[in-house]
Length: 302
Length: 245
Ligand SMILES: Cc1cc2nc3c(=O)[nH]c(=O)nc-3n(C[C@H](O)[C@H](O)[C@H](O)COP(=O)(O)OP(=O)(O)OC[C@H]3O[C@@H](n4cnc5c(N)ncnc54)[C@H](O)[C@@H]3O)c2cc1C
Ligand SMILES: Cc1cc2nc3c(=O)[nH]c(=O)nc-3n(C[C@H](O)[C@H](O)[C@H](O)COP(=O)(O)O)c2cc1C
Ligand code: FES
Image 1: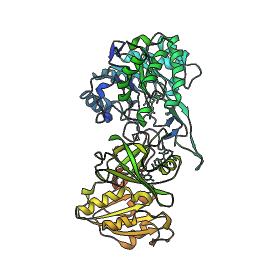
Image 2: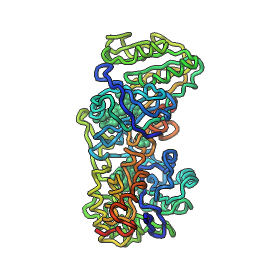
Image 3: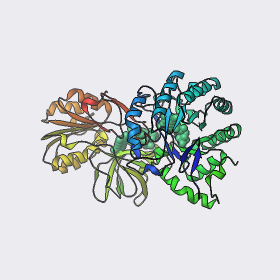
Image 4: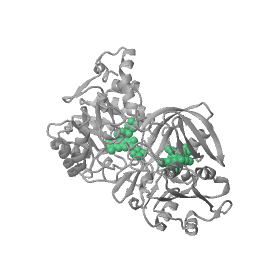
């Protein structure tokens, strides 16, 4: 049985990748299970300078999901290169995906170049879809023109390493933006980031998260993510990492049938830190039950 | 951190709207008083973080107040029912930081996480003064348990319906206890006032809304003098001088 996937010259022993922001820098989970069972890891979104992010509370519970307004807290690109990456590489041999964000095309370009220069990084994921920071992230992901600009700057900055652009669902036409990124040189696309949402504490009559709005994700968004992955995969010819609401091996299969070559697991890691391990372990059993010999044969068949 | 399934052996109301739940199962991840567990409540996406009051080889207990939907469901669970729990979370209090005499000041359910700390301080021969503050007599919990440990315990309520009348800060002024190190857990306003009032070194236990409870989501970060820190993994206990209130 084949569970490995090769895209853009990078070998993933299986298609399961913890999503950016829901698995720290990988290191945090190393005492919990052997990271080497994962296909890859997408690291916490990193910017040029260290960021605190938004004030707390920045988590709100929702039915079958959650809202976060973390706002890209990270120690900055220098700390990523100096501390996090070497520490992670010393105990993990799988694919490392650096997730990069910025507030200007120049910053994206600089962060991408720095991250791509690190020998530990196999692949770049450029986040143009964070709903939690003003003037950054999402501002670039909601316009085809701006997304294309960031994409071509990132593509130039990353040398030979594959660049995936991570798209937002908070747009009228995700296909238009996906195509613009493809034309601008993206090697692949990751979708979706979180859906802009809100909760109100009806006792205190205030928004639950201090930032008022936040990104909604978790099981509840799976059908939305699946639909967008399917639309984009039918319109574009570059590989897709499908993300949004995945919580079990069956969802991985469904996401791949919709068109994803790799599948990311986000918020589910927060409620069940073992979930990626459980998915990797049950994937072959689910494949067997469904008569799938090679996981690659189901990519985009629907 | 460890993940495990625990069976409920007791779940009783010990004060108005406040319950003590004992869970039987693996306690090998518990290291210090002041650590917490994260309980998966059936029907909810996120877990509920609760401090551990006490543990032994066979299980542990938590004391919780019903404040919303999740804790309401917990309060209705019966003996024999099972819960999936992450254990051994957070750093906990550092009992070794105290040389010979400790002051432990708790507000409300802050009395729960401090319990194992006080046990450890007494076991290792420290003199301990405990001040437990509550709003009113009907909310008093664990006072007798602290007395049974052999600590010098003082009760204070805001409305004076039990023990001294006033805030814990008033009780500190009145008693002027001897200590070389203090520990506090309770509402943020109380701990802030106390840290302003108390001289000398000490530590405080913070609370924040959590996503993962185990350090991977950066959902619970607070400001400290040494930069952003995760309450769940770098805390919940911080040195007094570290916290930016
Ligand atoms: C480290 C830590 C230790 C704690 N120890 C105790 C304890 O020993 N005893 C006790 O009674 N309570 C304790 N709390 C608070 C307890 O977690 C909340 O009261 C509980 O989660 C409320 O859940 P709910 O579903 O009833 O409330 P809801 O308001 O319906 O919950 C909605 C969401 O908000 C979160 N939430 C609500 N209030 C709090 C809060 N004060 N802190 C953190 N998250 C909150 C819930 O976990 C849930 O995700 C602790 C909190 C933390 C962070
Ligand atoms: C707490 C949290 C933090 C996140 N941080 C980032 C981030 O730094 N960069 C990024 O590209 N996406 C971030 N995301 C989005 C996820 O990677 C993912 O795209 C989204 O949550 C949808 O997947 P899910 O439904 O499985 O959670 C974050 C999500 C959560 C829940
Ligand atoms: S709750 Fe996730 S890092 Fe603290």
